[in-house]
Length: 359
Image (cartoon, helix red, strand yellow):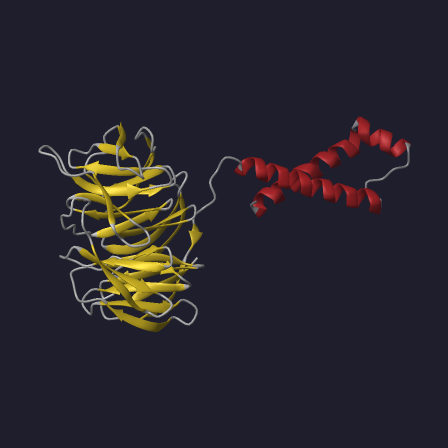
């Protein structure tokens, strides 16, 4: 509520009262009954009424308007590892991949210090996923994955990945949800036993016409985005196709599941969309920058690291509507990882630092 609005309202009510006091019917009646507006009781009552009217008018004026975006602030910059690239939060810690050093780095979010470095071998990228009480990390270029035990901060086992018919399968990442686990690779999606890592079923394999360029695993579905922009819904347990959604927006490069719906974004611009997971209908679409570098979902908030006019920005969108609910300039260049960490958001940068933003 603005103070100038309240002041004007007070003056208008005072002028009206003076006009009535000079000649109005109400004023004559009050004088005949010996009531006076100068009475302390009446004055106090009028004051309360005045404030109530002003508050109601202000509320009505603001009804239907979204609140302005909240301010976010950079509160720290950490040097946790030489080449941070990708983060996940699990088991009370932040796990940061360093593919150059070949380490998965465990950091304490409270002290912001490194607790352990788990060596898995240097590679182009390290993708870490929590599966039950472990962290699973596919081995790049090999049909295998490492299973990290957070209790000992060591690789508990290395599992060979094979399709049900015995062929080697190279996974690029692991998706999990709803009690099922899928390894994602160029040959499609391989359902894995969550206890042993054994390959159970292969789905979404390439055809002569198209191939899958992205998968997403939600509450009750496994979706496959194919090279012709078609989105196919698969049974999350068997991998059998259970329907086809309308085609994804042009140039869609990846999809990500949120509950029963999908998030989709192109490869080459800064737009983001939420799609109905049953039909593929666009529920909302937002242009949030020139380019999207990283994103993360935390509860009902979508966090985006974007480049806008040559500078980097962290933006928060409401997941249900896509409206802005916060943004801040980061003063960095490029992002290689992003994760919500309690009341903070950690952003890995191309310069090898981790920027901490308070929300």
